[in-house]
Image (cartoon, rainbow, N blue to C red; front, side, top):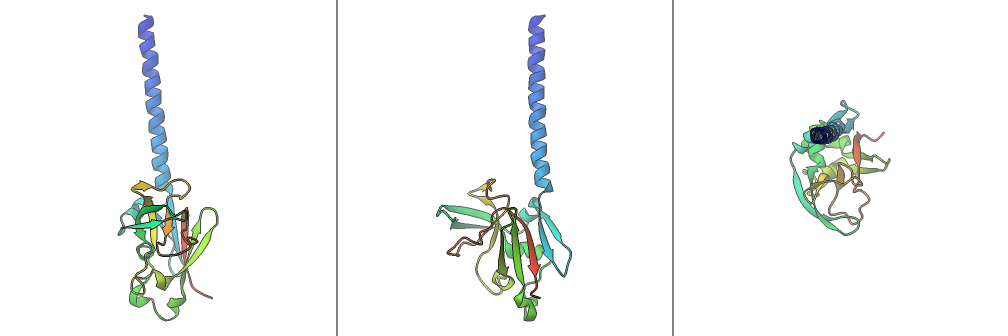
Amino acid sequence: MQQSIGWKVIGVALLTAFWFQCAISQEVNSEEAEFALIVRDSLTQDTRLNLSAIAKLPRLRIRAADEKGVESVWEGTPLYEVLKAAGAKFGEALRGPALANYLLVEATDGYRVVFALPELDPAFSDRVFLLADRRDGKPMNEKEGRLRIVVPDEKRHARWVRQVTAMSIRRPS
């Protein structure tokens, strides 16, 4: 009798552990589903791109050293492609007064940087501006956040924004 009670206790403990693991897994998947990069454009509506939508855009892998000199393989989507997916116009449509437009990138901690739209456009430049979601084949760590801007040819890493949450296309006043 006591032996059967022992097995029941073990069974309940295993089921509880399994349920707890499933709950944690669902919570993580729910958090990923809830996270969305917000792309604002004063001429169109805001666009929310979740991680799976960003992952479906054209992707690149680049090798670059971070601010500490540690070389890594960064993987993600060019900023240009993210902005196009949100409705931004590039190529021939980027001319005249639109050449003064810029992109304001915002991070969780309030850090903000600016990129001129023409510098992001492959019709103007061969530079790479990557919205990275993987480093050395793994998702970004908590410090870097889910998304990070990587600009491999910049001497200073001031525009390598960690924990990117929003981007706004702005027009000068």
